[in-house]
Amino acid sequence: MQLRKGYWEIAYREGENGDWTLVKNPKGGWAADPFLFAYHGEIYLFAEIMSYRTGRGYIGYCRYEGGSFGPWEPAVKSS
Image 1 (spheres, helix red, strand yellow):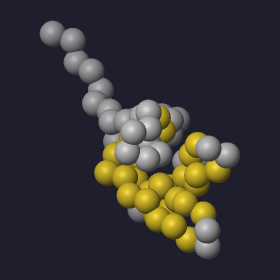
Image 2 (cartoon, helix red, strand yellow):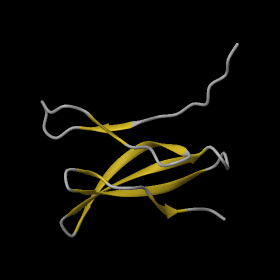
Image 3 (cartoon, one colour):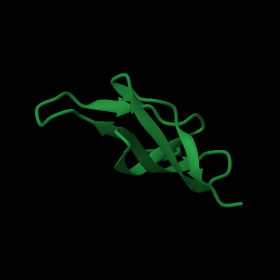
C-alpha cells in the first residue's frame, strides 16, 4: 500500500458562470479553509497553511492583484 501526503487546493471564480481558477499552494505545503477580506479597496485571501516540513499549520494570506492572487505570506504563526 502506498501512502500519500494529504493536501487541499483553493479555487475561485469571478461571477456565477466564470471558470474556476486554482490558487497556487505555498511552497512546501498546502492551503485550506479560505476566507476573503476586503480592506482599503484591496482583496485578501486568508487561509490555514499546512507545512510539510513542520507538520504544523498557521494562518497565511495572499493579495489579489493583476487578475490573480499573489504569493502567500504568514499572517499569524505560533512559536
